[in-house]
Image 1 (cartoon, rainbow, N blue to C red):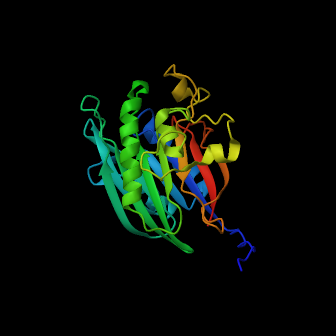
Image 2: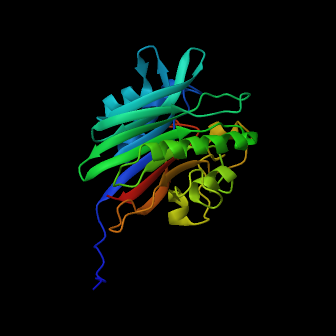
Image 3: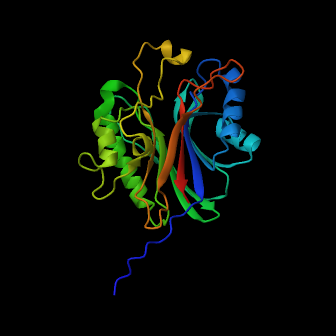
Length: 273
């Protein structure tokens, strides 16, 4: 006889943030304390960061981790005027293992993008966290589609988790783009059978959630339209609700002591864990 009783849904939560920190652009030394304060106030368990600078033996991820009391994994990609730009994952809990891959380009528009992985040793089970940053130019959808394929293969290669994978990133693509549709299964998946929930859309549907917004004076200087280009993706939740998205909101969208922390707004998602 098959039982019809449902497993009670998990009530505890995992707080995840994704944020592009805008490298050393703009008044970056003035912005740094605003970034620290914003992250401290958010008090996330796991943080995926893009455009994280690294110079000589220092990188901003390590400095943030030290100030906030986090563990971290940092991997650089591009080098601009001798200063590295990469991705980072910060975690409240120890990181057991890490991995990094280079993402493809078309041979003409190489931006040295990478994707990184950290297996977080959380108190209720290991958490697979990925972070990436795709090519930025609007005509580069064909490159971003290749990069999404690389990312999906990277996620699959690091399979073996009970908690659904969490992917943070600046994808530089609108939700209706082919590359995002590949992630969410609205078109042919990058890897057969591997698709993800878009946390913002899961909670808010088609509601506007711009992370690149002209209300931010750093964005207004670029003369570009408002867009939603930053994402937190998750794998399908487990029968007990593990990994189920319960909330997603835009954060980091206000100045701190009159300084805007970044040109991008951040995302905060809460998942059952």
